[in-house]
Length: 223
Image 1 (cartoon, rainbow, N blue to C red):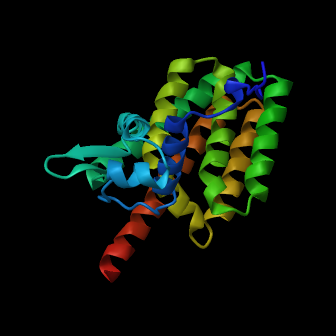
Image 2 (cartoon, rainbow, N blue to C red):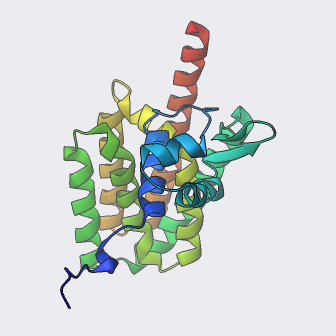
């Protein structure tokens, strides 16, 4: 038969392409809170039907990045101050406990992986890459606990917060501070000090929350 074979396992579906693009646009702030997601316009932009667009928006809604409003349809979901507080506090509790569980189970290989993820984050210069590299570093540490439900919860929380984490990292000392705190957390793991790693992780997450809240307050005051 005369055709060029394509390994479909190595290609993305239309839904995946639209999902990735919209998710990245939300994380990068190109689609702001409350921005409408009009299926017909999106389908035209991607030269596809509305079916993959509808499926992509449904996935984004499951992540909490999109919400459906009466008479308006799908829009980028905003997070209220109370939700913001709750999500960050939950993240601090879950991640500090995850790393406490993980440290005694860390191997040389898992620590080498975490060190590599830390270095990748520290060297990164493209803001669009920072949230994913930040996530990879943290999850490389928690993964040693072999607790998939912890990772599922943590990834769900990070999905809601990625756009705000990017803002924090873009602040004057955001990347420098994050890199410094990551190094301290990783060093505690390498020395086998689970309680110190847990305490540093908790403080790290709470510090990010404080920085973002301060930025958002300043932005509102200037508006």
